[in-house]
Image (cartoon, rainbow, N blue to C red; front, side, top):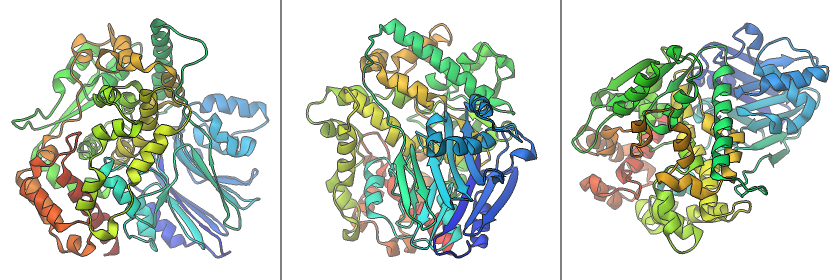
Length: 594
């Protein structure tokens, strides 16, 4: 796990090495173990390393194979690299290191752009072909690893976060009106290629870009998720056994492919608890588990320790439990926002930041339960949507969109009012071929689009802020492909995630399996009052906010007057949505200009 960056010039000039150095500085927290650079005429790479596989200097990056004429910067983990290494050795390739980085380099030489189809893992990487003078960029199937870029007629710059590109300079920091529509209607999910800034784009998941020496670019999507029944029917018992075997193999692989210990982020929910349970045939008394909680408020408990404690008592893991006082949440908020590659409104982004800080003192790698709800139908709104009548779009947006298009027009000033981009996007994604039922279509869209730019991005940003690698076994593409073929009624049964509950029965305490569905509790950011309300009022009334001119002031005043009255259908604070975006711009864009 690392931070990568680079610059490619299209006008035969030299890349700006100082700009690459500034990008590396911004990526240092992602890779505290080593920094390296490489240049070759019009191309320069920068890399910050978090050493997890092959801890020796032989695996440092940028990795250059002069014999093959290739140079690589890579962020991520390839879980099937031992098998690929053996296959490449039969083709005559020889290796000077023991990790996945060199395997990736030689896989590209052997199979070209098609190498990505062989990879099982999370990755974002760039490969420079010194002979062809071409640059190849790729991102994993679910966008677990980020890749941002800025592009004009003279050059390409890319990096693992937007802050690095801003530090490099010469970025158009005006707000993208299409992205703004997504930001306020779709839980701050801004699908690729857009970002909130006009001058920064991001590579879509399961996609590659190839730039030739003239700057001509070829984009290719190399994978699509199919959500249809297989030709051979299976019984419920057959489905459960197949998924049990694949999940167990995946969790084991995510544990074994590392040269450092791998812990588990244990929230107390079914998903993370099941990760611990599936590792129980190993020595879990040496397995580090981590939980975090916050202060209670009258309306809500601030932790799920009552459930995580049951798992710890059952398996006797080496557990670490942290309680964060509410005063620390607001005090540390600016730091967390500064680490968000894009503005994220989910309250648990800050929770993950504070948790990662503590976990990183004990571990370099952890497994996390992200993706299980989207893959196995765990959210309460799925059956509610399914019961509605009307078009796919109508059924979905009634339960999911944060604002109607009309309310979006009330939210922003005329310069930012545009077409209903969110409705058009969701309608197109739900209409794509290769999915059988409405729930198939929703779950596929959730796993391949909405998940990417909400929980997955959140976990990567907040853990990597402290050089902590978070692995997400529920997003192994072979597991997801298998689950996508399963009839949706087997997912929604038992109140959701039926298959996981059956797999967990007898492995986990019943109280953890049968508990109500929970969410990362962080009451201080959910109930808008006191110091938190004062903070948002200050942000939204700041001269910078008024000068930016995004928000309709009457709408802002309405939310400030009664903040807890204005919530989204999924109970997010509409006032927090505005304040978070504005604060992100103040910290990351305005701050970059100072």
